[in-house]
Image 1 (tube, rainbow, N blue to C red):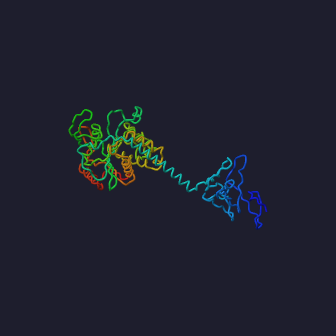
Image 2: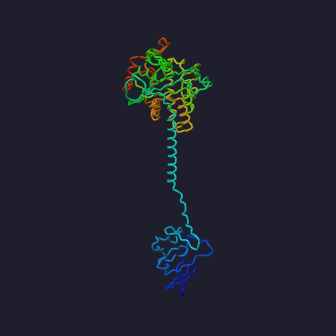
Image 3: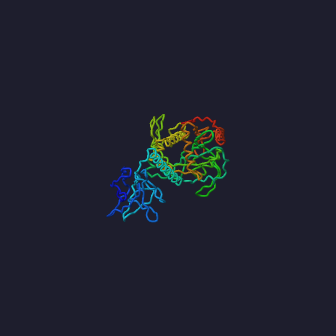
Amino acid sequence: MSDRPDAWSGTSRRHADGETPRQHVITGQVWHGSTAPPQTPAGPYGSPVDGPYGSPVDMPYGSPAVGPDGSPVAWPDRGPVAGPDSGSGVGGPTRHHGGGHSRGVRPLWVRPSRRRRIARLFAVLLCALLLTGAGTYAWADLRLDRAVDLGKIADRPPQGKGTTYLIVGSDSRDGLSEQARKELHTGSAGGGRTDSMMLLHTGAHGTTMVSLPRDSWLTLPSYVDPDTGKHYRASKDKLNAAYSLGGPRLLIRTIELNTGLRIDHYTEIGFAGFVGVVDAVGGVEMCLDRNIKDPKSGANLTKGCHNLNGTEALAFVRERHQEAQGDLGRSRNQRKFLSALARKAAAPGTALDPFRTYPALSAALDTLVVDKDMELPTLVSLFQAMRSVSGGSGRQLNVPVSGLGFSTSKGSAVKWDTAKAKQLFTELRNDRPVSIDSPSDEAGN
């Protein structure tokens, strides 16, 4: 037998039992250089030969030591050594020989499971929605015009139960060009007036929406003209005059004085905002039981159902000369339309469509005026209360009246039924079910 050490792959020899050992293919490294590193002799069964001072000699190409059964043997004090099938050589130090270097084999990329991909997509969408929602909230909150300070109003009634909102539609022409004023038949009069006023009360017994005719003959409290500083004593006048004489503050004081209700929140929208919101939601469907044609408001509608755009809707809610009950008929149309508008805006096809939601919100914020304590969640609660009325879970009615053509020093006015009106507002202040029956009561319309 030869005394040569065992040769590396490609060399064949027999053991003492006459069997030929199997060859081992060395993988995981590529050598670069002009010559291969010197071969290192191996002991019996492929074990390394100790070098000087008993240290093991590195195996060529970083191959592992092999035991009698063909399994890899860990290097002393060097941790486990990768076997011949590992390829990457992970677990032991990388060796450099003869000026060359070694490269590990990269693990194959494994495609994530379908469930994991869906979970990742859902997480990304959720983050996007949260960021978009937070941005929209901040944008809308900054644009709210909180111009009315209820805390500075004197001689107010005590706090009642539930929450009472005052909703005002003003004839403000802000944001309207001369051409738009002609098309909308708004005129060009200066100053500010109110075209509609409603009390909306929410509490333990649902929602009640009460219209206050603008020609209501009431007592205006004493006030100081904000422009001249002149003091005026309390006097009788139409409700609409309160806003034109003293703005939102005098209007709130007049309503609180004549109803005994404390106004918790105030919201007002002008002509331009109203038209913009209706157009942004794609119009509002209204069904009419007769033809309506009013040159003063611009209303020109036939009997049947129509999808009213912003211009047509404004003409409809301002029209009163074709109504048998005059101002009461107009109030009824206004409540009916606002409920339909709230229902349309909350519909999935509108609320989930950003191309409708954002323009509608932007149009509303352009002319919306609220009180200083109004927060966006409170404004949303108001909107939801209006929608609940349209869904049948509330009541809509005019304040009880005893006369429509009541003659006054300021022209024809609407006179309230004092006893019934007092009963209605007492029930609202104490958050009790409303028992008043009104000829124009519209439950769920």
